[in-house]
Image (cartoon, rainbow, N blue to C red; front, side):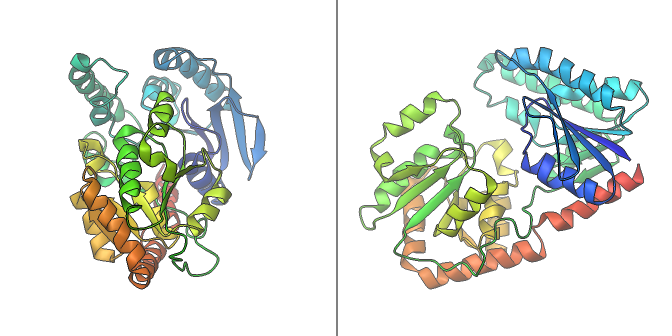
Length: 369
């Protein structure tokens, strides 16, 4: 089939859309296009990447103008199936259905829950907007040919709207981040790591404070790879006394991510106990496991079940600096046990939590269309 992935938000190198879904479909023999804002038009790994110019001024401007350009470019492709990845593209999905096209909505996040903690939306309006988005998703999703959900929690809701709903976990590729040889913790490094978007709600301040506390007993650093949001947060975090123990590397490509993972003792994923986070399946947790790193994670029931069942890390209260710092110190003080945790995580990814398993469900969904 001729397949067109479309986004108004994500990048041309997006891990889920381009590296995983598009390439899996291309390898399965489909003709795959990817419409994406502000990129170079090219063919990469047999996928045709198409550009739309998005000169936006804020969220609302993007939702009004970039989505129109994405729709026009998508129509030019004249694909058999359109697979879109952003809730703001739901109206575009409905328009494409009116042209007789097959349409798949890929739901990366629980948007109604997400709305409740969006700082750019005035707080008194959040509940009303959240309920309105939920009703609109219910209305539109019943008209689409399939729903792809990133987590079981999201899938459970959409299953009531559209019976052809598939959970497609955002698990890592088997060999992308795995160390070339078994990861061996080197206590001389004393290096904790966080990779991903750097936000207040993802625990940046708690991580900086915890590593500062660890340095009362150990020489330990925090390696950060990602971008601050909002940008003003960077100055605030740099002003913290614990930032002197932090090595901030900015945004890294996947090869660079693999390298710094190989140099770490542990991976941190300390999201705050927001409702949308407690039911999420964060890719960074599984990427740490894939790289053979023990994980220190928020003690949400879903995460605890995965980590304790596979004996691949420690769970803590993400708001408790004492608990976090004690977990970091335990990893540093017990290198052999930490090494075994890392191996357990890597084995769990090899057998269960990998994209190769998930891609089979994607291929079967397209065959059903």
